[in-house]
Image 1 (cartoon, rainbow, N blue to C red):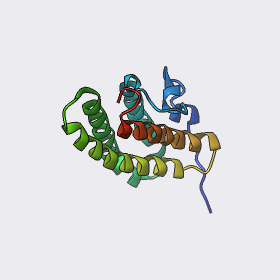
Image 2: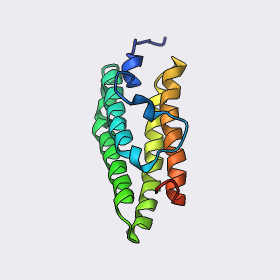
Image 3: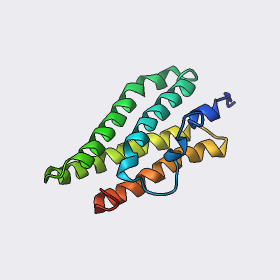
Length: 144
């Protein structure tokens, strides 16, 4: 028998946060938007854990690991935005690796829920936005 828990969908989707729509817009991020986007991603991770960890105690042990991943992604993008030396190429490779880890994390966040569809697609839309951005970062377009 499946247990169902009520989750705060509005809060999980950060709809109470100013500029929340930056998380899921269907276009690549401009480098000027990245800092806000990454700060909101940290909030998304915290809110997911606030909602889901009480349901399963084992889940909370990954919170620090996921927040560290957000910090690493943020650091990597910051280097790409501020560094114009040859080390940027190495950082792009590192970012590609981090992106795959981040992708797995967001997919796992979405997989916890069977409904509402809006919440499941929220995590997928964040991932899609990062995919689009990652593609242009690797190509050096849109200020990257």
